[in-house]
Image (cartoon, rainbow, N blue to C red):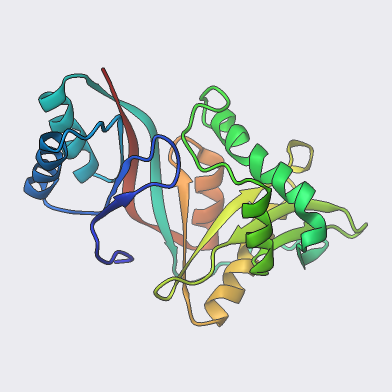
Length: 235
């Protein structure tokens, strides 16, 4: 498994829900009880199924309200990389000079992902990076453009620095006019190869309501690890 202790933290986006890793139902219910007894206002719970459902349901029972699904996600880990059909161009590391475009594409990523999954744009809770956050990511050297044969930047793939030997890929963003040309598959494949060559394991999250991204990553050799959900408690 990719998980390690602790089994609960806070997601880094509003409303900062508890983030649950896999745990027994009894532990999830005990966590909900402890939060309620402390008088914590918990409007959402995020994390691994079924623990997150159990915890949210108990919070709703104790404090009133109804549990609604905001988003279903799935954690994948790369096994043996399967190369896609090649396309012209290659990866280029983004620099601080690219902060404007990278900030724009980071911002567009979640809104476009909502639309692709059939949700209203901006419906998903997520971390919105500001310029300083983007600069810090650029300084790691782990944001790449796919540049086509004409030198145009047509796609962006990013990855986090290694943590406990695991690297998470994302965001992965192609502007609407450039989709369906294989840029994303080739960029993610090459980024994944480089990460594995460093000796790290590679993972990424997908939105289960977005069949396009799930299909692309499965074709590259990514395999499901655990299903997750963002749940909202409506009172």
